[in-house]
Image (cartoon, rainbow, N blue to C red; front, side):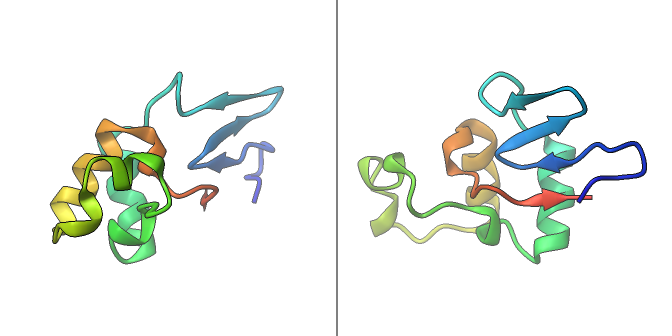
Length: 87
């Protein structure tokens, strides 16, 4: 949802008045991912198990910790489940 200035922020696309900026060009920050995980209840809730790299990296066969999910999302934007709106 937009804030009082009309800005919205999505995890997949950061929507700013006048245009969109993809997470490819502006990676998610540690503080953003930490805030989102707090709101979502876990890092795993933000993690996309559908990402192509999930299978190619053999992650499906591994037991991942919350810190693993956090680091994977920070390292590779495609692991971030989209869209998730943050107000």
